[in-house]
Amino acid sequence: MNTSALVKEYFREDKLPHIWCPGCGHGIIMHAVVRAIDNLKLDPEKICIVSGIGCSSRASGYMNFNTLHTTHGRALAFATGVKMANPSLEVLVLTGDGDCSAIGGNHLIHTARRNIDITTIAFNNNIYGMTGGQYSPTTATGDFGTTAPYGNIDKTFDLCNLAKAAGATYVGRSTAYYAKQLTTLVENGIQNKGFSFIEAVSSCPTYYGRKNKKGDAVEMMKSLKDDYIDIKIAEKRPDLAQSKILMGEFYNKPDEEYTEKYQKIIDMLKKESYHA
Amino acid sequence: MGTPKMVVVNKEWCKGCGICVAFCPKNVLELVNEVVCIARSEDCIKCGQCELRCPDFAIYLKEVPENV
Image (cartoon, rainbow over all chains, first blue to last red; front, side, top):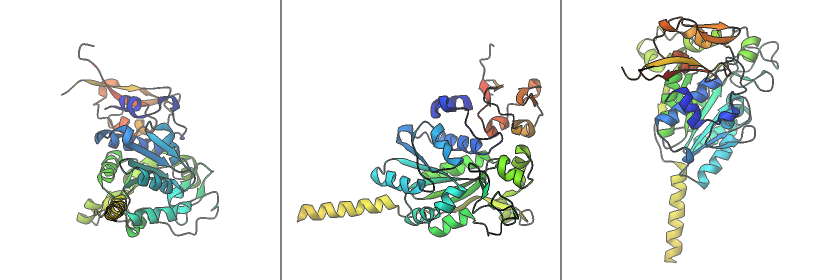
């Protein structure tokens, strides 16, 4: 299906064009997510897209599924509620680096710990774009933001390592440049029956790019190409991986899913009350 | 070969970021007044790289019936 057909099928056309800045990677990532849904031939009526607050979270407003635009950092908490109430829904959370790892950091680790069947796509642009360029937990040490005028002294979160350590059963990373790989990771994440975390590295030419002299949209997109290397290539050719960031599928180890465990309790109690 | 395709632009949605222009392997596209235009359509190999990375859904390959 080409873009025009995808837009007609899966987007609220009257809400487009979107409000993201020229050259923002978020549109490419949203496109990749929708392509994954289309490739898997999922029923749009059975999909629920949940988002929090921030540039990334505008995505839910453009996508023509069941959508829920929630409060800052709480997308995963709302998504957990949706999934518990109706486990037959395919729940996707579209969130940002600030939304899911700062104010929503606690929700992220506990949703991962439970291994509930939610696919999270974190649009990581290394900054709070919507509110004016404050540094986030993924802003590199030494980089600038409006709240770090002398350089960021914080250490940086590796979102994938964080999700994996907390208990996510599928973890991967790709960038807006590698949109096809990103689509594949999202497909795999949706198919994993458990908590899947996909970090989609984006670019913010307006704030992060300008504050850090990273160049324009094209220059930043080139960085999303040149600064990353697939983990499979890096394992074979460590010489190529020097000073590059790893991407690809990092972890894929299915485990018992949360709503299924919960259903077992319900079934057990029903049986007991029947025999009582 | 499949159905023939041609690259088309939705000028109303193009924000002129230049990503498609920069990553077109055949240098088919140009920015004119901050909107992408198909300057050398005869060189287009219909690879879809522009469609893949347009953040604004503004450029894509469209299938065209053979008799057109």
